[in-house]
Amino acid sequence: MLSRRNRKLARYLTSIGSLGLIAGAATAYLHHATTGQILMGIGGVMLVLGAQLLANSPTGDDDARR
Image (cartoon, rainbow, N blue to C red; front, side, top):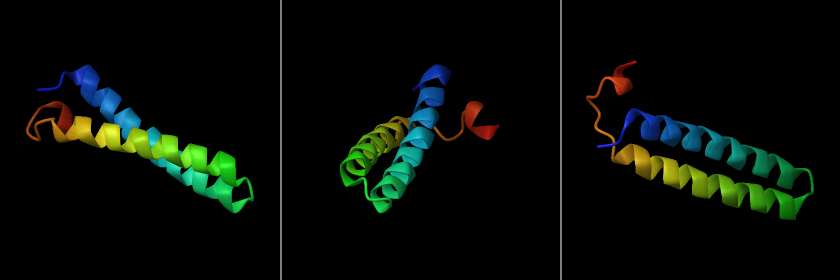
């Protein structure tokens, strides 16, 4: 079971990871392909790590109901 701090970290990882994917796609669209690929790679890794942490979190806990 994850602590409240780890669930909060997992939510931050997923939100920052998805923003990284969006920023990377926009950067690649604006003809900075290498920077865009790096941003998308980092964002994808953060998104997967955050999703894995949240997958271990129970759905009926108090923190998830807020």
